[in-house]
Length: 514
Image (cartoon, rainbow, N blue to C red; front, side, top):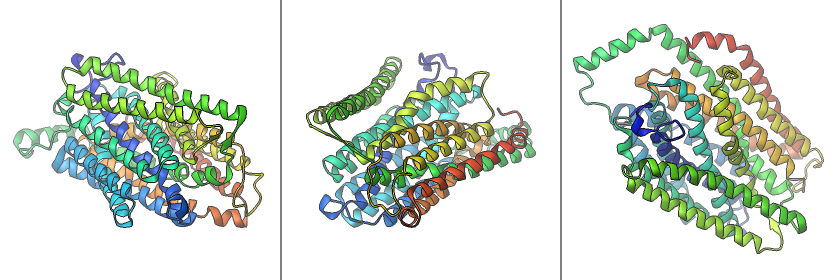
């Protein structure tokens, strides 16, 4: 049911279907980012610590290949959904494949480890573009709400990333790698069940393509669509999508250092052992950092329950059960940390900062995008690139005291915290806005395929992230860690300047889409 149906509204002035998709995507991102937080750490940890003892270079190259392929398969998944499965079944099958993949990785034997990576890559290809497409279809009658809706949806993405990195990272580093990988699979399974049993709430959205698509009625609909969108308008809008996709490569190539070189910086060069008052402050700050977002998410959950429990009670039962388990793990984790004399911050912990800042700031950005201060898409992209560059400039300055060739150091955590803050501001200007523009600018019959093409840009970005990140040891030995991070300062700044210069060119070719 599209946006505007009174029986399908939450007090947030968005359809309840958006929040079903919100939580489904949240659990998928829980599994993906939970495993991603552990991948490089597991591969580079010594055999005595249960890891595989790989070099930083080899681990980062596998990381780049894996995260790249995760974004390549959506173009195939989008095509399959558009032509055969429909968005709904593509999401369900994709979630099942990813559940099997995480279960395989939990075994930690080499054949099953690589099998698990392959299953996650294939499952993500079916899942990722099609759940994003369903969000867009909820707003066919109210496209002006799409930017705000995708920002809210993006909050769900990062809520899952936050919880996945926090819990899978903690359990993987402190308890055992297998337990961390296995936890990721459990909540992917919950996400699949929650979505499957909520399918009736979407009406006809996401159904398989009609078998009688060549009837005179359907042909007249296609002719009407062609009249509404002349060929030159379609061409120009696809050019805009292509330009945006190209510039996202430079953004994500730098941003995705978070799971690679920035994690190595946290592990090897950052002071993570705190005692005395510093440890006490961190324990309380970490507790607030964890509990406040969970309270917000639980509030959203209860509002969804109130609106939909009679219609999709079984779906909400699975969703509620998953939240009970999450709260239990969080309480266990925090009580365990308060019993320790010192606070040893997991290297994966810093990655939750990005998600926490998004959860905190996404509502503000959503309001800005709906206000009169809303800038154009190209300006938003340029701002995002500039903010990303500032984050890396902070890291470059923070690492300036580390001598050339140093294997370990103990710099303050504040530099990573500030870097993640500015990176998050940049991400909020680029990623949810990009998803919204793909939805608004794409021809209706090819929206799944266009989302797939959008994610191909992320494929190249992640390959480049892994490749460039793998040079960290080489650059540190021959120059310094500051030089390494300055590379990721200048690239986004240059891309941002070019995007600003293209603002007028791109706005003209959007043909009225703001």
